[in-house]
Every structure is written in structure tokens, then in C-alpha cells.
Image (cartoon, rainbow, N blue to C red):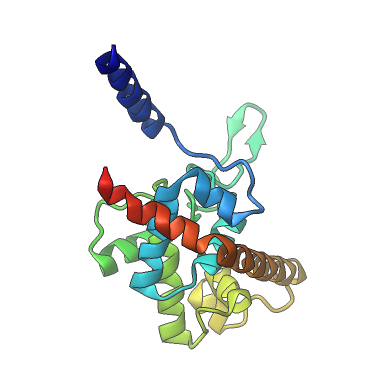
Length: 202
């Protein structure tokens, strides 16, 4: 009987692992990570690799996709015919095809997928790291990092964001969310660290 129960438990775990995690409370980064500690571990790995604070990466991802794995820009329709999407942005990080290709080439992660959280958070870390290296924008400067992320580094250098009041408002919103996430993370970091450190037992 115990063997049957163990088998059912393992099967349930495998089935749940196949489903895509969707956080219930997007306003609390602790709740997001408690719901899927693998996400926290991936965020920690990206932070160690690229140096971008976790709360900055998560705030950018929230703005880009609301943590929807297969997010894409909406497309318009003409009668019953779907028109092309306005960009190739896809996945958690809303990375466009050229940027994703550059990321794969630069990091050697040829099998990286935009709808995989681990790869997407690493992409955001890489992108912000490269922005800091090439444009001298601090990795802690969520406002300007987001502008460079949205406009591309070339656009940011040309100050293409000037005159786009809606975009400046969005960048301020991402900045405030990063501040909130950062404050929340301080309260649950030890708990989350203990959770991922304990997995070696299993």
C-alpha cells in the first residue's frame, strides 16, 4: 500500500512538472518564487552570472510578459484574416528574434528557448549586463535599463525615448515595481535560499 502511494505521489509530481507555472499574485515576488522555487534558483543563477539584481530582472519580466511563457504582441485582423504581428517579440522576456540570436551566440546557449523561464531570466541578465558594459548604465538603474531594453541599445543611444511620454511613464512604473520587489525579497530571501539549498537531500 505504501509503495502504491509513493508511486502515485511521484506520478503526480511528474505531471505537475509538465504544466507551465503561472503565478497567482504578480505583485509579490516572494509569492511568485514560493510557488516555483526553480524560478528563484534560476534567478539566483542569472544574478551570479551577470550581476543584475533579481528584483530588476523580475520587474522587467513582469512588464514584458506578466510571466506568461508564450506571450506575443497582439495582432490585428482584417475581416477574417490575421495580419502580421508588429514584432517578433516572444516569451517571458519578449525577446525579439535578432536579440535572441545574439544572446545564443554570445553565451553559447544554442538550445535556449524564449518560453523557458531559466533561459528568459538569463537573457534579461545578459542584456542588462551588456547594456552596462557598452552604455555605462548601472545594473541597479531600473529606469534607464528598461528604456534601453525596450528601445534597444542603439535607440537608447539616440535617445529615441525622448518625446514618448507613455514609455517614460512605463519605465517609471517598472522602476517602482523593482523597488517593491527588492523590498519584498529582503523579507523572504533566507527562506527561499534555504528552500533551494535543501533540494540536495532529495
